[in-house]
Length: 138
Image (tube, rainbow, N blue to C red; front, side, top):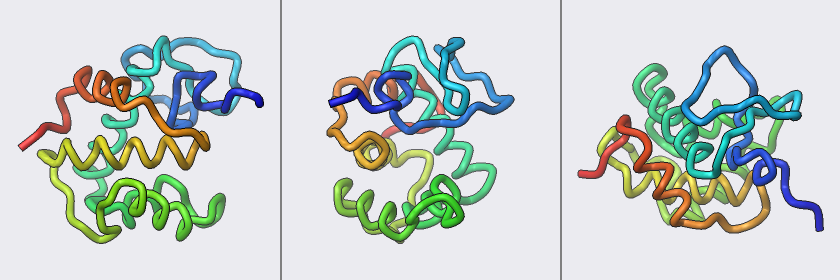
């Protein structure tokens, strides 16, 4: 079985190329998606992105986040929302805050599963969480 693209790129949420440059980002061979120096830096970028969604766009639920992250024009957004809610154990309409770090860790783990088809290594997710300061624990 071929290693999923997000795992090969150390970019478990398959964050697309943009003008934003994240810590740990490096030049890769993928023309569509960013590449990171390690998986924790890929997860760090995920948390920073979700914090931007929260503070800049007011996207504070799984439903709102996924509608932007995986828009219906490119994805089965309803299925994405349902899967993330199921695997994270967090209701799709539960409000999140910048101090919901424990919940964001579960959401990022579920998103990584949807993006790559394999369960994430929770220690790498937590390492990525610890590399950022935008989202915290209560």
